Image (cartoon, rainbow, N blue to C red; front, top):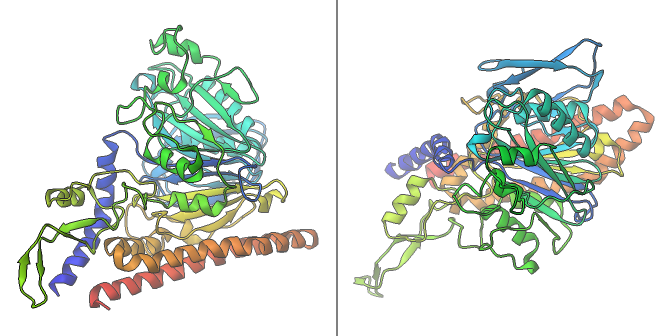
Length: 539
């Protein structure tokens, strides 16, 4: 009974401490969000891909905002605080920053904390790259999530999105810290990085670089753009880029201009590098033949993968925690065990040995790591994995120009830790999402919020990872395979129905999304009951 009580107590503490764990990591500047980009010739099926892990305690509710026609003098409100609301109708701690003129028609889009996909197959990923404090101007109108919303309402291509953001921040001002957007359409994918112009200076400074069609790239909270060429096929940048750098004494005008050095100075650990473990790990996994080094100052922004990349591989990489490398915490030998028994059962002194802790998992809290370190395990150290337990939601988005936009754009969504949760599809043409997805579960336990139906099983599996991981990962991978296996049928059926009865095609698409999502909820509720029972009874 005492053992079971301690296990349950550990579960509660783990769930409550994920926020504290994130706060500790944030002392090193933002360690939230990872985005992988894939050009169309680098992907297995010819799709363009971008992705995102929203690794913070932002809202998990999401809805499809419908397309709409507007009157000539209509305006659109720009807000701050939507990231922490509880539902589409909630306005708590949300305030109006200003308004801009509305356009005649806005597109339908998936409204997540960081809006991510519209009906024209324009998709966005995001990572915070911080930058120098001297660049921030909180008086600007736009934060990055509101720029994403406006872009998805108004743009059809990545280039249009980049140009619109440039126009908006020049006129109304950028108020956020340094941000990276990974912007993709049916043809190409770009990495876009933006900063403010400085205190009380309305505007923004930015640069964008196109990822070659046959390459992949990664952004994980660090500015990645280096040298910029005056070639609009590959590079775009704000007209004030060099002026801002000189005015704020970030560049003397003589040295070679390096975007990440000028506007950030390096990564969040004070190293003069344009990458961290996550970028290095993911790029090395996709292109091992390149023998990348993590001792160099500048890792290439993009590289050609050894093999064509599938959406399933991107999902796997966003779920990774460096298993098979020296950085993996799961399965390490943690508990000193200096005494053994001989054949007669007598305890004998031996050289120090160790056993694997049943509580060993990839996402141990800093206090747990410190405890094991104090017990003699010098290999234990805090390290930021790709997947993290404080993730709100994650997307892997495929854009496919050979299909109708409604079915060609698909966002594979998971809530909570990507290393544990299943993914379900939301299409660019989806009209309605299940009610459970329209409720945020970040700030309180709510059975009507989808997040908690995943989180209960995930937290239980985490604290007994050695025992439960096989069951959980098998279920997670089942839904990954199910989605890929069924996609050709869904695509063919939708296109057939679209020719015969568009309304029936829409109902089929919405129904498939709802059924797929519902199946993941049922399975994770089943896993939670199983894990609770086995944790309590031991069998």
